[in-house]
Amino acid sequence: MLKLPKGSAFLKPVQATAFLFAAWELLSWAIVPDWPSAIEVGRILWRDVREPSFQAALGGSLSRMLAGYLLVMVIGISGGILLGRFPLVDQLMGSLAVAVHAIPGAAWVPLSIIWFGMTEQAVIFTIVLGAAGIVIVNTDTGIREVPPFIARAARTMGARGVKYFWFVVVPAAIPKIVDGLRLAWAFGWRALMAGELLTSVNGLGQRLSQVAKVGELDHLLAIMLLIAAIGIAVDGLIFKRPSSAGSIR
Amino acid sequence: MRVELRHVSKSFSHNGHALEVLQDINLVVEEGEFVCLLGPSGCGKSTIVNLVAGLERPTSGDVLVGGKPVTGPDASRTVVFQDAALFPWLSVLGNVEFGLRMAGLEPRKRRERALEYIRLVHLSKFIQAYPHQLSGGMKQRVAIARALALQPEILLLDEPFASLDAQTRSVLQNELLEIWELARPTILFVTHNVREATGLADRVYVISSRPGRIRDVQPVTVPRPRHAEDPALLSHQHKILGLLGEEVEKVLREELGETVHFPEAQHPAAPERSLGMHI
Ligand SMILES: Nc1ncnc2c1ncn2[C@@H]1O[C@H](COP(=O)(O)OP(=O)(O)OP(=O)(O)O)[C@@H](O)[C@H]1O
Ligand SMILES: [Mg+2]
Image (cartoon, rainbow over all chains, first blue to last red; front, side, top):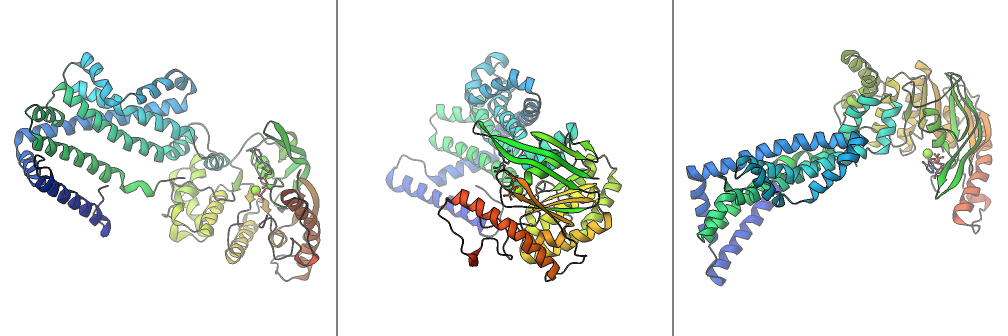
């Protein structure tokens, strides 16, 4: 995990990454001559990120991810609250949410293309369906499983009805909701790549399929490296930091 | 307000069959009185607290507060739970303000009142701290401030100091007594510590176990402030320990089998021991 520079905690991932690249370089140089050299891949990546058309693709991917993720947050949290709060909604929609959650993001791509064509919307739709399920399910569980000691204490202090829900149930569920959002980021990122690979909208996924078609292995690895780095960086920067303060159990 | 339990019994279903936890409990706490419930572990003390708090219903009999049957929890009857039960997502201030917010008090008054009670338990320096940053004793003080801030007519305390060291406990006991003398809420205080019970209470109910029944009521007439070595207190303690000794032996026999014997010298209810701690 990527962490903020904080004493030795920062050194470990840096050292580990350096070690990995050294091993890669050695491998390509001494053992498997066809394998692209790490230095060469790094050079290609550096060239790519300075090139305007590549930047457009990167920007396209990130903005799609942002749009999709915002929708996931809104749909996931409000959907989870509805399911957790109203038994009738849960009876009608609960199994649907679980079913959606069980389908991997990539499997939504064909349906997305039928509905939206080879468009931006199709990709965003894929992200939403690939990632909203986990947020719905986690929000729902968090809301149902308020620790009994919290529920009892709140009730003895006069908490009931809507106030009980907003001031006790929802905050008690937040650690669980954050867990869901974190997983949703990973699921969404995967779904984005699947969507872009198959729809040929301008993005990193499309770049992957282009360089693969012409057999540029080193270029392919460079883009994959970037995809991994973004996935890890967002997870580390957004979700790693605040976890200790709000935990309940 | 006066609390009264009339012929109260309580059973829980346990693997399909009913387990009688409380049997024919008759108990009164007069308005403004400080009453302790004392008994071995598992005798149903917390169940009595929950009944009065409205978190549980009796299987039979009546739980009356101010002459009226209890139908559910109410902010006029607050509880200090054994494990503090603070809300982890709220600061000390947020926790103490919680009940006032539920009561719909306006923000400025809410803040003022919360700060007043936080001051009363000497935590003014920690208003912004979160529960996970506090020691056990500090958490209990927050729980007490939180329960008092609602200015309840009845304060229920379920072994509030059981997990604390002797010194912290005695500091908090004195703070509680001071607060009680100021506002005079009706107090029902659960403990399994004989010294604590006789040091604090106007009357001590001794509860026997399996099923829980009122074994005896001991009025403690020693005037406050009380001193631990006061012979009158010690004689109360001895009387109660005599009753409890049989109870503790009974519990241990049931739990450990018939093979245990207690030589006089290592009686399980030696005065400096807390009952049940070793069970
Ligand atoms: N919700 C419940 N369901 C089933 N059994 C219960 C329930 N609550 C309490 N009991 C049982 O009732 C008995 C009394 O429990 P209670 O918590 O009132 O004891 P206690 O006197 O407070 O004990 P301690 O001093 O250890 O806190 C125990 O045997 C317990 O197993
Ligand atoms: Mg108890």
